[in-house]
Image (cartoon, rainbow, N blue to C red):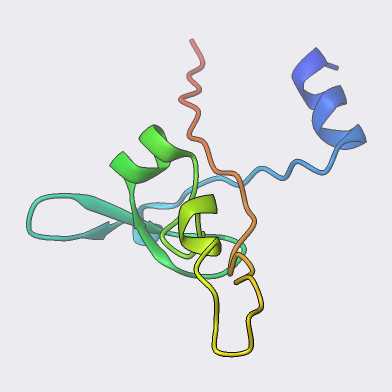
Length: 87
């Protein structure tokens, strides 16, 4: 068994195969749905930030709500894309 599969089975990582109907086309970019929260996120954002649009970064989380509570991230998934080919 390949080493990468061993690591995936023993960690909290999850992998999925993206089917053609999972890709949404916008005017300028392609989008995917986050597998954890369902937020529509650009492929560029996944590659550059590693998070979906449902993730609340540390700066935004420091904003206080009316009851002085810190805001929690809506989505905690860390996202990445991997290109796999077989010959």
